[in-house]
Amino acid sequence: MAEDCIFCKIAAGEVPSETVQEDEHTLAFMDLNPWTRGHALVIPRNHSRNLYEVAEDDLRHAAAASKRLALRMRERLDCDGVNVLNACEPAAWQTVFHFHLHVIPRYDDDPLQLPIRPRQAGPDELARVADQLRGG
Ligand code: 5GP
Ligand code: ZN
Image 1 (cartoon, rainbow, N blue to C red):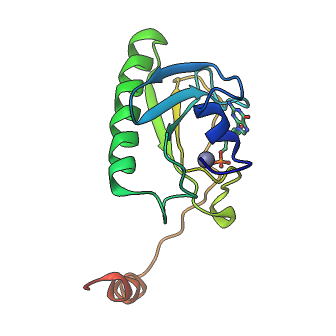
Image 2 (cartoon, rainbow, N blue to C red):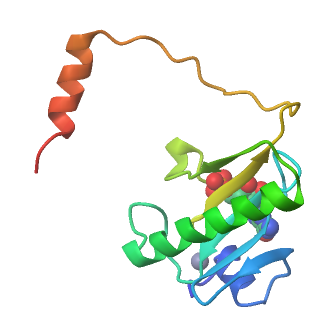
């Protein structure tokens, strides 16, 4: 447990939360500021700052827990889809520094919109960045 980590405190039961699903490795609870009805966060019980640092086992357990929760949302909330979102570092909108996955039920008539306007990249540009990422 990390000192001053709000999600560690939630996992330890020191701070209240609306927990909806838990197992040995993970906990899922309602986000205080939901984007849609049912927006939840899945966390590993073990503390890590974010995707860069999370242990692979914790990541696997959190991903599996997100799937279980998504199926439950479909069944119980009658949602039409689900977004799973992770923010890693402030540049990517991370505000709480304990790894978590947002599991956000989506409804055909919900008001969420992508904040992104994708642009087309030419083949050279794609090839250059792929070169940077490829290989060991
Ligand atoms: P991030 O911005 O790091 O991806 O997500 C953090 C999320 O945690 C935010 O959506 C925020 O609403 C939620 N959050 C922050 N503090 C608390 C808290 O004390 N309890 C709960 N349940 N959610 C929190
Ligand atoms: Zn923590």
